[in-house]
Image 1: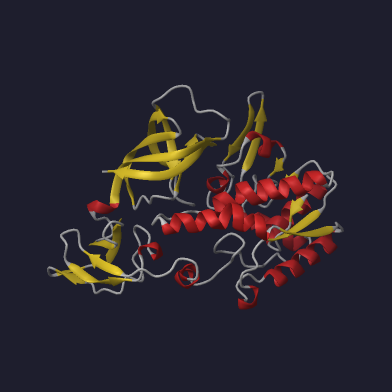
Image 2: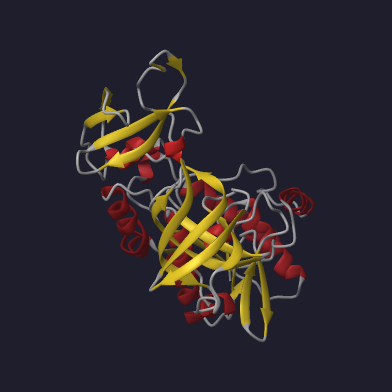
Length: 357
């Protein structure tokens, strides 16, 4: 069962599996219904494209609505994190709970054995189990978003695009006459789509204005709510660029929840924006258990498409780890994920809890 989203990547995933001799079916998932009339999700257009692809490939296409599961398992946690003034990544939870849980469970009940998606990742199996590895296309690699998957989920998964780059994928779609060959890649929140994020968030997290201050306590203005900002953010502050004779843009450096105050600094690489150490909680290890030896040298990624950063995993404590980086990391954000790699293999990751200089 291929999760056909109406995009080029899942379309080519289905094409490749057919060419490899699999019996393939498609499933279109609709998981957001809160504001269909606003036109943000374009679910109807995506469904039309998925139907056209299925017809071209000669495979059956089913539809399913996981809106309740998405709200309960993903979106409610997303809102809770924002209300706690952290910055979550819902796409990561969406993969674990919807694409590789609800979708997988639905597929198995229909009597099919595997699910496939258009993710850019590779899966390697050996005597120790399943290993999630980097895609050949480093720019499109999506292992960051898949690091919460476990051995059971990976045992039922296929990633047909893992050895390809985006240009090759589009070329295959074009040669096969698929309507998605030149379709623009989707962006925005998983299943919710593109929109002005602050306006969207304000519908669920009410404004709570407070002061914008420098680290020295100088008041520069007022913010509409801490939840609407993330560390390192430059846009939307509404303050000028001069202070103490220095002309430079302002960036969010911290959130003081106790005083409902947004702390800002000038300069892209201000010291308060840099950290060499972080603690991550709720660690998940894809193998099912942490590496036996610590400390160990590894790499980490703190956001999607960030080049892998050299670091050391220095200590385990319960479900937490401490990472120390060779180079200072900018705007390390609580609520985001720190994902750990050893060579090409994604070992797992956790939620960033705290940072140190």
